[in-house]
Length: 367
Image (cartoon, rainbow, N blue to C red; front, side, top):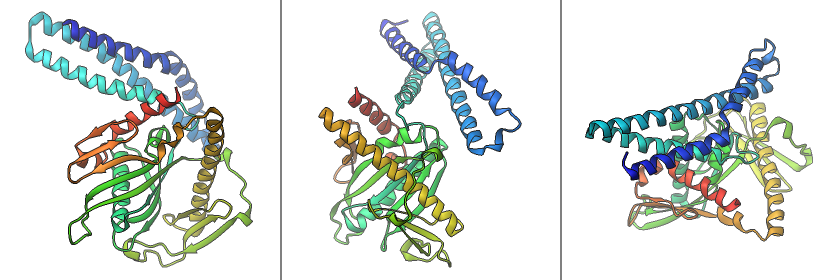
């Protein structure tokens, strides 16, 4: 094998070995066997929450083990492919081997990023809220574009998205939206998207075709486990019911089934209008409120720790990414310096590179 290729191959093999040392395939097999035994118990679904936790954990472990085993086998096959190409001086086989080397580098890199998600809440589902900021109708349109970007990203990964509430703007776009992403490590993955997203473009709403800068805020919190539920006194809540509405204020529900809950001490407002009944909407809205209050408490505790340490790393979250569509095309992450000129792909949900660089950056700040 060519010395440079041999170095590349050895570096990739070392990366995979590092991942295996973190994930521990042998222990994973032991854990899978134990979970399979629990999952086969006849009374498993008597406790639905526990059953879901067991089956979800089993599914994640099985998936991770398959990925590690598949990558290890492909590395062995690749070594043979390079040796074959060299022995037979076959240019086509060499091209095939180089393509597989690049594919493996990408997949091993993605799995390595997964091993960096070791925070307390990283394994959980995510609750995402998008709000339009400065920029008028353009900002509302931008908020809707961001929502589409994230839902397309989740579709590509096969992650279910459940929209809890959408507040439509009068002319175009949305004032805000809240949705849940259900997937292992959804919170750990998407939490790096929190912050202010800035768009620069020629405004489609300006009849003089002027350039417009608009902003939208993305908030990401982990879904709360039932065991963590907080007791919120009734006198701290204001609960309003109203009719669900669609784009442009169009009524989509003939009954007052949508629910808005205001937590008076903090001013946090949550709402839900996607369920069939007022009772269901209230329960969902309360779950969202619980998540936001727990995240607020966690951030306050972290702020105290950071203040003691003199740590300002937490301040990155404000303006974190810029999307420029005019006078040139570029998306640039302001924390990691990662950038791309393929703005249409990014806005269509191809944000893996941006997210992965964000996760690596976050880990480097902790270290």
